[in-house]
Amino acid sequence: MKTSIATVSISGDLREKLEAIAAAGFDGVEIFENDFLAFDRSPREVRQMVEDLGLAITLFQPFRDFEGLPEPQRGEAFDRAERKFDLMEQLGTDLILICSNVSPLALGGIDRAAADLRALGERAARRNLRIGYEALAWGRHVNDHRDAWEIVRRAEHSNVGIILDSFHTLSRGIDPNSIRSIPGDKIFIVQLADAPRIDMDLLYWSRHFRSMPGEGDLPVVDFMRAVAATGYAGPISLEIFNDQFRAGSPRTIAADGHRSLVYLMDQVRTSEPDLALDLPVLPPRVEVRGVAFVEFAADETEAISLATQLRRLGFRLSGRHKSKSVERYTQGDINIIINTEREGLAHSAYIAHGTSAYAMGLSVEDAEATAERARALGAQMFGQNVGSDQLPIPAIRGVGGGAIYFLDEKSPLRSVWEVEFNPVDDDQALSDAGLLRIDHVAQTMNYEEMLTWLLFYRSIFVTEKSPMVDVVDPSGLVRSQVIDNSSGTLRLTLNGAESHRTLAGRFIAETFGSSIQHLAFSSNDIFATAEALRANGMTTLEISENYYADLEARFRLPASMIETLRAANILYDRDAGGEFFQLYSTNIGEGFFFEVVERRGPYNGYGALNAPFRIAAQKRAIANTHAGL
Ligand code: MG
Ligand code: MG
Image (cartoon, rainbow, N blue to C red; front, side, top):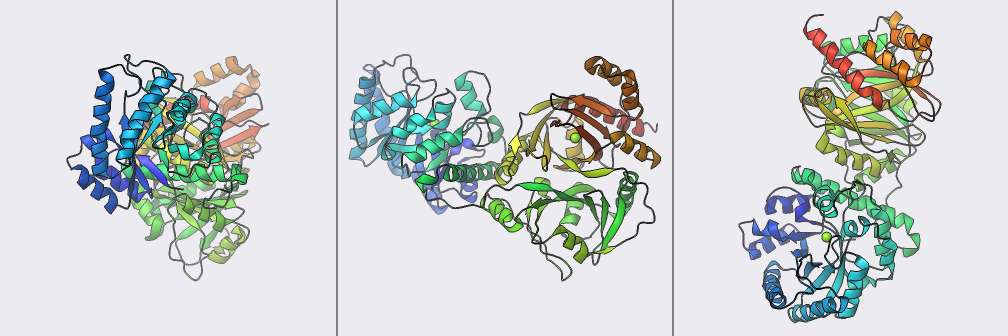
């Protein structure tokens, strides 16, 4: 499989784009004409740059408003094409994209268009060039790949082929299976893009909201399966018009693009086994069985206040690392690690972010296979020097430069604690609060990074994504994206801040980047937990009286129930499946907090409707702290 990406997909000048594209591992690049025109190097110099980077130019594009014109515009269009052919020869590429005509002058008619393409194909053949015809979703007469194919078929010229673009087909709801009948060698290149489902003008949707395959809602896998069934063996090329990407880091966006293609083709390979596609075999997407631990990096002083909080939450110190300043706190099945080492990743995380939850361990069936899949998908491997008293645990880098460890039965977690830790009897322990497991891990990041991490998690782990939810912070909007699995053993929420005045935005600014902002623990009886927390001296986040008055009106809960919720600062939600209860700690350090939840019945949400009230309460608490109240 040869991979390619259009220069228009990422930011920077042509050189920066090409360097990022090469660094991400692509084989080829589509030169978008404007990127070339805006660049101050000659076509031959660009050709040399591309070659030096080990890339090939897969396509020169776009050539607009060509077919079906009346004279004299028709003749002018042919002259214009000849000049682009000159340029292509200098650039060293043999394929140009002709997109269907949008000009009001264009005359309809499949035979007229076919005759024009045939005549241009003849001129291209004289120079050993090829022309590919693409149906734009908003083309004046041709806006469907089935019509484009009929035109190409009738042009009947070996230098004329079709260019398929998933956006143009899928945005109009055209069945991609209609591609299966096109001969693979008549498809000159395949362009791929996904997009979120938005009801808007096709042109505007396409120019601003395309995304990498897997990041949006279009059935790009079905599209590519149909392409694969034709025997097509050319490059698969990303053509992504997205305002956010063009403002983002070229290297990150290019890396996301490459990951999206590897993930996509892995899905195509496994869903079309009869095609025996010549593609790398990846270990399958990984089922996560649970979050085995979360690790904090802290300095000694902050480690003490974090430990105090954990004890109030009912955790007890149960182990100390044999050779490192690392402590293990436990309750139920939950493991929290506090790392105060002065070297290694924990220390650099502390230097970069302050006290923060920078790493987590996930329980999986096969840790090595998980790491192998992640590696194939471009994840950065993480390995620290392992001492004689430590187990080598496969790990990758995650959000904010943190680490994700994989633990399996072959290196049972129990033995990690047994091998690396000395047991401790905690003489400062308070009452157990009935916390059982980590319910969810909430990571906060800049909004621009959300799609990157969505693709990262979704491509490696068996997960579903729910639609993005907007959470209103008094100072702006926070986008929230849930990634979880059906068994609830992996629940992640990604919160993307658009403004640094939002609580999430301030967290990013003060902790210098993305990381885990809150950890939610599950309880089977949140009222008993609340009572234990109170007895342990923990202050919970105070929720407004008005919230409880509204709760009564919304859910018609009995007054006694409302009173119990209010007294313990417990928030409430309900859906068709069940009920949800949540309470929060006050902020710790730079805005980190803990949450306790109880799910009664198969409630699968996260209390998104309550988030604005929680955020307002947190902001109030911060203001009160600053005012010395
Ligand atoms: Mg296209
Ligand atoms: Mg939460």
